[in-house]
Image (cartoon, rainbow, N blue to C red; front, side, top):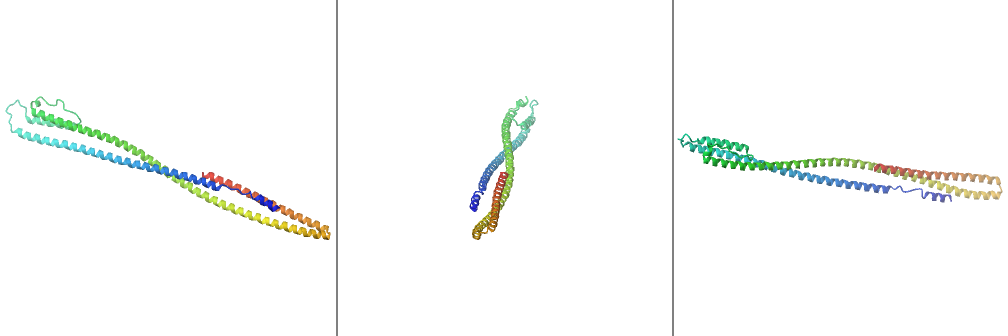
Length: 320
């Protein structure tokens, strides 16, 4: 009867600690962290693609600026070649006109007029920014129709080249502003990309630390589980041994008491019967002490399970 009661008491002493459910929660949290890492990877990839696209745009803008510089250089070279051609034409005309002898003292010499035209043309080509000559001719120069036509032709050429140069400079300024804007955007994106990379490196380091800590805690939990299982097995073996011992004692005491009582009753020896009863009482007290030890062992098992539950809860809180 005592053994059956002890069996009934021990069936509900052990409870589930919920370790498997906590492991499932931790796996779900690690899955969420991996998804966040994937999102960060995608953002870094998009920023890198945007950076590559901006670099290509910068290269295209630089190529356009180089092309504009080449056009400007070609215009300047054209202007210089026109100037040399004009000088050659003037020298040829001087050679032709030098053969003509001016007999009249009232006429203006042609060489002075051509030199003045060359100087004015040089001044116009130095300015070359849409400035037109206004009343630059003298009264003596206006007397020669060829000189006036020549000056008008040169003025038209100067205006044409000045307009082309002004437009080229305007386009160059527009491309420079666009290039500065793209450079600023590229710089901002580069700073954002560097910040993202630093944050990503920090997050990776934190994840590695968390993984290492999780491994340490998992190993600690495994050791605690093994220790708990070993302690529970040892207590169960002790309980089984005590139960067997109690069963043997009860069986032996019952058999002995029956034989001795029958013998004592048959012999009518009351003193021996009283001693035997006292001995049986002592054995019953010993059995009650063993039962008390079993109850103490059960209480120790409950305390160990509570300690393990508290320890596992603290471990999970530290991990989270």
